[in-house]
Amino acid sequence: MFDPSSHRTFRFTERSITPDGTIRLHYALDDAIEFVEELQVPVGGDAGAVEPLLDLLHWVAGVSYYKTAAPPEVACEAGTPGPAAAAFLDALYSEGLGELAVVNHLEHLPRPRFPSAPRATHARRPLQRVLVPVGGGKDSIVALEIVRRSGLDFTLFSVRDDPAMQRTAAVAGVSRLVAQRRLPLAQLQELNRTGALNGHVPITAIVACVALLTAALNGYDAVALANERSASSGNLVYDGIEVNHQFSKSARAEALLRAAAAEATGVDVFSLLRPASELGIARRFAQLTPYHGAFTSCNAIFRLDPELRASSWCGNCPKCRFVFLVLAPFMAPEALEAIFGTAMLDDPAQYEGFALLTATGGHKPFECVGEEEESLAAISLLADDPRWREKPVVKRLVAEALAGRTPDVAAAFALSDEHAVPDELIGDVHAVLGA
View (cartoon, rainbow, N blue to C red):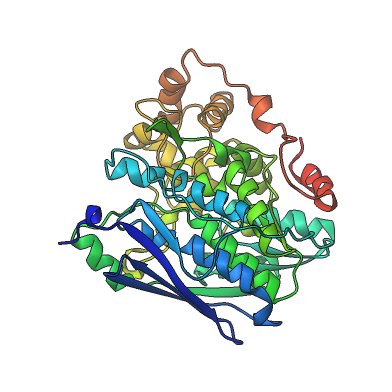
């Protein structure tokens, strides 16, 4: 059996990249277990010019293997992080694994401390070419349309090549760069079967680092993520820390990543949707009808194991419920049923799941869902909508989840000034997402 407590040190042993973009990342638990991850990234420039970004990817991607035992120490044998990278990694391997600690009933969050050494900070490049990661969901679609409006040269980017990503690119009519990530799945599955810790990892941070590396290799000036302000809202407090399923999408993680990236490259990284709520983004997406048959936000289609992936909306998870809820005020019931394949607000069995989105009956689910307040705002809008107010789940949500609570609907749609969106794009953010 695998005993997580028997391991003391997680080691970052070596990493490499070939001229054709083949990356190998090596790790080890003490001297006992080795892990090797392979990636293939598109290359349009000099692979030798991105060694610092390769370092950053090596450290960040290691969280997928560190989690098996969550040992107290780390050893960076292939290079030492700069101060900003070390601060990012300290948070990623602790707060980013908060949910892992909760679901595995660990006494404390992991708290390894990364070594650091002085590094210079690079000046950010003038913004002319932008790489936009797309996962096939509504948020990245709204982000790509904001960049399109700006007139900047841009290309889409994906890690993996899932159907929803293919459909999004086809509707957008924009070229896309694709990276592939090959994890040692059989090894991880065997470790999980025999006692390894298992659970959510901060995957957005890994995708962002692959995107940064791809951007540098192909002459892009920035990576424009699609993380909204709602992603900064946590789920519960554990071991004195607010645990957030979406930590690596949060504003805190974004600021730490930007600083770490600046130690490695002049390529910028920021979230284009940071000023907006999920509800505001949904309002805009509802108007982008060509994408309605293309997008899928259900995370069941993104599972690492291909045999466990769903092909479309599962219709019975927190993410499906939340997306349905925030789109409903802006779309007709029959239009949403055509997208999801089910009338979720007509099904009384779905009530408890929708109520949890408002933290009624428990804490907000460990999923990529928005703030409790904006779920309440969506319910408030449905209560006044003759198309929706008689639906069984809506009636009960109004009577029970909304009872005694007065959500600030206007605040849910207001755009925040707390963001890192460059001047070249902030006007387009306001034009697309403003009231």
